[in-house]
Length: 428
DNA sequence: TCTGGGGTCCTAGGACCC
DNA sequence: TCTGGGGTCCTAGGACCC
Image (cartoon, chains in turn purple, brown, blue):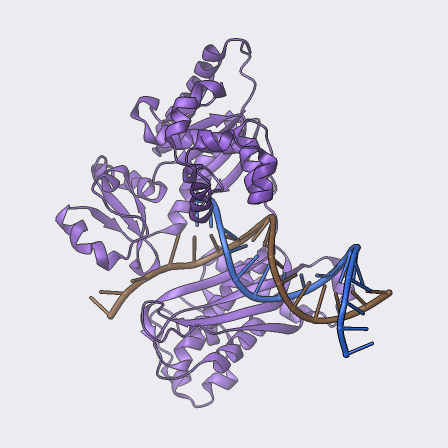
């Protein structure tokens, strides 16, 4: 049996750990730059605060309802997540960390009588309750637990666990026929793997509820929709199509992008921002010991304004590399080409779209290779940032960070050409 | 004035070859 | 010049997830 353990409104719950006075009160957490709402606790949802809505649109509502608002703190959330995952290990024979706030657990055999479905279901429910109580007791994070024979059923169970108060945060789907009534009332779009588009196509075919989809012929579904949806139908019937994915696979692409707090119209700040993203992407690249062969650079004005301008440029690198300076160089060049003046840029980013692993064979094959000087410099950079916090060591191309006064550099006419790949270390 | 930041997989269609 | 089938590879776009 699989269990899906899902932290309840995770970011909000993390904030509450340090603000126990806010327990039972409505709170929301905002995205980067406080752009929009990314997490709401149960009380905030009850007050009709919508998800992923622009902050400015609901600011008044939030103030009127006295809803506490937090800027996001991803380092903190990562830390709490690691503690939750660590604790969950004790309850599983195997485990997959699915996202920052979710994990699939393969449950141990509970040694129960297979012929007695209701006893069976109760045993799993009790087990789920123990998980929930333990995580709350040890870490003060509320979780929901869904249990089922497949990942899709476990997901569905966790949805039911969150919806119904009677579940007390835990739902075990053991004997499918008993769930006909409940499944008939749940719309298909609540199923893992079914989004807006599939839901409306299914609706056009008069398939509305989970129970209806469960009773469809998988092969028909495959022909009419896709193999994925066919697998979903199988999984709903308790036939596993997906196992635990234990190993974290190396990323096939790495994206680093941000919306700006304030719109940018000038070229240089845009290039500094791009340099910043290029640097982050390279850092991620090096942690998986890989090299980039192609990057994609994009800049965008706001989608919400007229005359939306969102060009992108894909660049094949002359040789595979993970040297921040090289990627910065090409990324800046791309921005220079894409840039048009008199526009208000709202967002930019760098994506490393083609990645190769840095195996010895690859390096032999792919000459010329990075110099050892480059390797050493990147290692020093990463080590400093690991030990002293990210952003401690960087390149001048990324712009002068924090409160640094580097007027002499910045005002020099040759600043952009001569010192761009100069490494800098910030002294705190 | 202010509107997230990541990812994966599948499929259809075009280019090209025999 | 037109007609035909079978196959692979690549890419863009669509759909989904958190």
